[in-house]
Image (cartoon, rainbow, N blue to C red):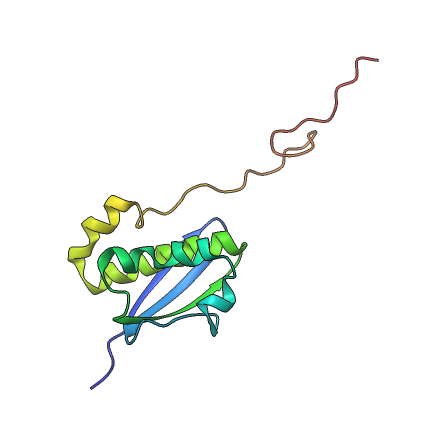
Length: 130
């Protein structure tokens, strides 16, 4: 019998996470590295595990993810979004619980572009009267 796999894509800022979930012992592998190696900060690891802990799936499924673009925080957010979506594709009854916590909402905040005649997106060059 073929192993059941659940695929999902999560996004945040410029990061994209392609997530594959399948029955296992709770291992999380990101870009072929263990979670603890790829994400050195405990807060990011905790953030990634949130949807699994909320739904009570912590030790039941393995997560294999390929993440690219952005920085570590954006990648962790994208991974959390992807895991949440994979959980919903697995069991639609979890949707309400995950949506209430805000895990299914794609964070729309992006970097604002730099404007011409200015130092950055909002910051101006120093004004000189004389």
